[in-house]
Length: 159
Image (cartoon, helix red, strand yellow):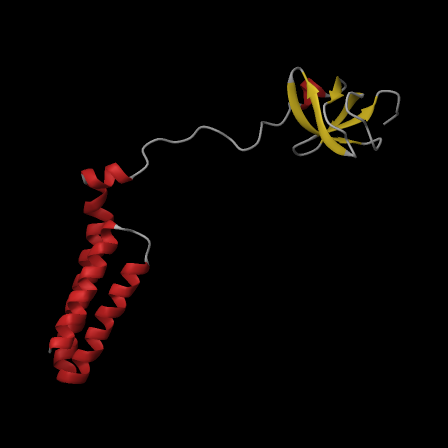
């Protein structure tokens, strides 16, 4: 009987800590301890004792889920640990507007061999040089737009 109570107490304690410190590991260990308590109950007390232990373990699991997903998010502690703000930044600059850039001239700000960066109206864009290698400072013409980059050629080259 002591082993069953110890396993259930450890399971309840680990599951309770899991409610406050999310991550899953403590909850899984608590569930394993509760399962071990149930198995031990079946071994020591037969079907009646095991069934009672199973009911208690299921009740503890349901209570834990209710606390973690219904009550805990409404508490001051949860609001303190939860993110309330969002970041409005992006990892990539917006792609160029096709109609606004086609046919315009730009300057290579890095060597394009054949990819690199160009500058147009003070903004840097990733570019692919269709005419091959273009050194930094080379004037280029925008002839197409790929998914996220400009397709350019040297001014004296034909596209």
